Length: 175
Image (tube, rainbow, N blue to C red; front, side, top):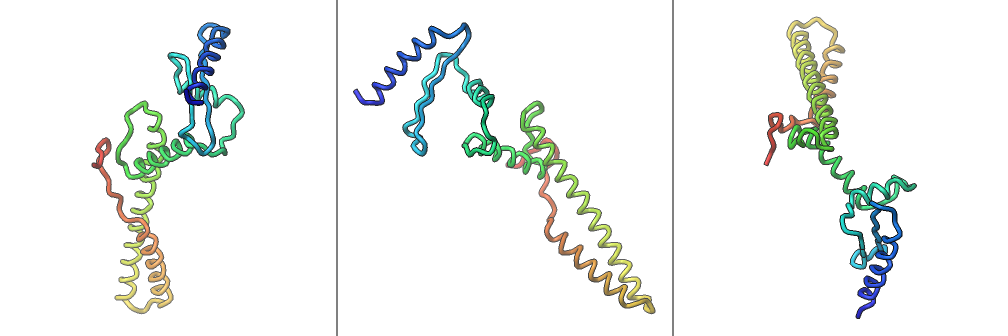
C-alpha cells in the first residue's frame, strides 16, 4: 500500500471520528496541498459538502485580497472579459446573472466612448468647414487658419485611436 493510500485511510478514519463529534448539520472538509505540486493535492469531504460553501467559509477568515491565488485571478479575468464584452455590446449575460452588472459597466463605457467620438467628429467637421470658409473668403488672420488646422490634426490623431466598434444589436451575440 502506498503512502498516499495509507494517508487516505488514516485521514478518512480520523474524519469519521471528528464528524461524529460535530453538531448536527455541520460538514467537514480536509484539504492537503503542497505548494507548486498540484498533483499531490488531496481533498477529503463529507457527503453533501458544497465547495461554494467551503470557499465562502474560507473567505470569512482573515485573508488578504492581495494574496495570489488562482480563484481570484480567474474571477478577475472573468470580470475583465465580461466588461470588454459589455464595452463591445456583445454576448450579454442573462438577466440576474452575477456578471450582468459588470457587463452593464462595460456597456456604459462603450456608449460614452461612442458619444464622445461622435461629438469630436462633429466638432472636427465643423472646424474643417469654418477653416475652408475662411480660406476661401480670404482677408482673415492666417493664424486662425493655422490654429484650426492644428486643432483638426489633434482631433484626427485622437479619432484614429478609436475606430468604430463592431457592434451587434442588443441581445445579439457574435460567433
